[in-house]
Length: 172
Image 1 (cartoon, one colour):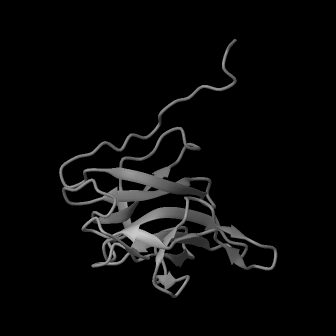
Image 2: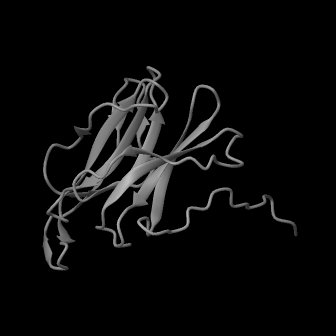
Image 3: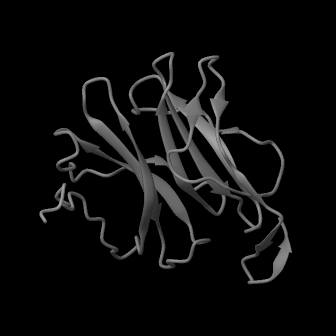
């Protein structure tokens, strides 16, 4: 039996010096039909989940069949790292970007932040701490939704205990 679809890799982001790993990302369609892909780009030499990372973007101009080679950093490393991207076109036309930020010295502080763009991802607002309390929260990619009331809803898991940078378990 022939498969119902064909799987084809259209973007490879192999490790290289100063960029040992690239990780999960999110997608949004821009008004002109291009696709914006934002993903976690680790920087430095470590591939560890707590290693320094930033958010990078690539653009597809052909409906996701290929991506331009130009990589643009849209959120530099804030604290320890940034990761777990969600993108959403809001009802007012802006694009919302939600991501997790692990704070500088404490691997047990990981919180979601929100930025918005009114110019199709060319620039972004200052980050807003969504939860406002310290703790270790986990959010899967592209889970942000907007209700008909305009309210944003983001499912997040709170981890009561986490492993700090030294490997010790402590309260989150």
